[in-house]
Length: 128
Image: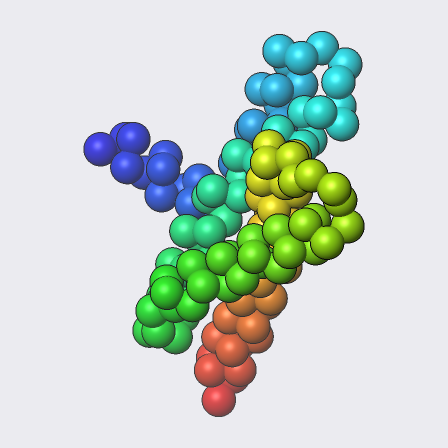
């Protein structure tokens, strides 16, 4: 039961996941702040995906799982196409790493927008 609460908190507030992962990686990797930041972002991306879907579902009662997966695939397809057009040979691991990090930026932006809109919406609902 405690595990469910911890997992729920990490999904609901992925910024906590980011900071915890960053601190853990920073402690074990000794003075490699950039690498620790990237690894923390990689871990947080997984939680952000679920957080965005759950936040939108909770706020507006709309399930966007298929749309989120479709957008993620489109990002991967576009990045693979760009990589294929600009390089002689596609290196899979670096490509997957770039796709995953673009997903982090995309999901982080969507997460913040959803939360800001949700807060403003609830404030306006409370006022009226």
